[in-house]
Every structure is written in C-alpha cells, then in structure tokens.
Length: 100
Image (cartoon, rainbow, N blue to C red; front, side, top):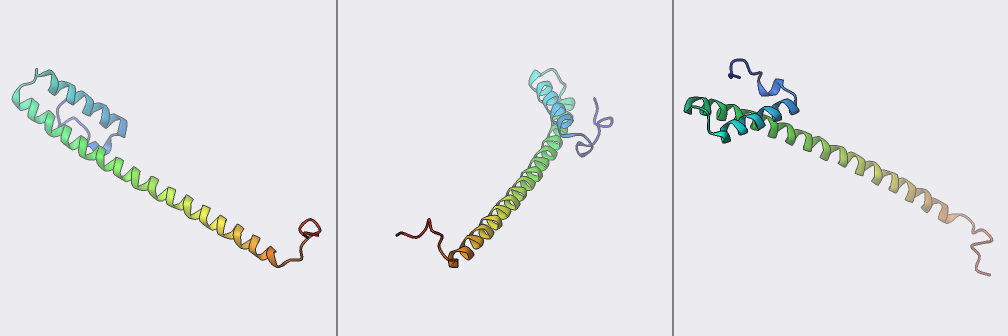
C-alpha cells in the first residue's frame, strides 16, 4: 500500500490506524523491504503514531473533564444534603431524641 493510496491518519478510525501501524511495524521488523520502502513505511508509521497519540490525549482530556463534572455534582449533592440536615437541627427534638 503506497502513501498515495493511503488515507490520511485523521481520516481513519482509531482501530484502522492502529492496525495499519501494526502492519508497518511487522513489515519493518521483517527486514524484507528495500531501503526506500523502509523509509516510506517508517515515515507513514510516525504519522500514524502522532495521530494516535493525539487522539488518546484528547480522549484522556475528555475523561478527566467528565470525572471532574461528576465530582462537582457529587460535591454539590453532599453540600445540599448537609445544608438540609443542618436546617433540621433547630427543630424540636422528638421523644426518641430526648435523653429522659
């Protein structure tokens, strides 16, 4: 597969780009390619790797943001629950709460 017929890494799904990178690594490790083809494959592999790393970093950032939103919601819920409990402290004690 030459670089002219390969889609840009950004146009491939993550899985497609990763599979292509795996194939390139296997080809390079096989040692059967001519120098020029090896250099072309290596260059394509670097492009794929950069694209995959950028996508992973983006996904990690989104997950971190979502976790932060969940933590904010949990903190808000805990604060609201504590405020409701504190508001009830001024009420008259029930017969179960009176020590005598």
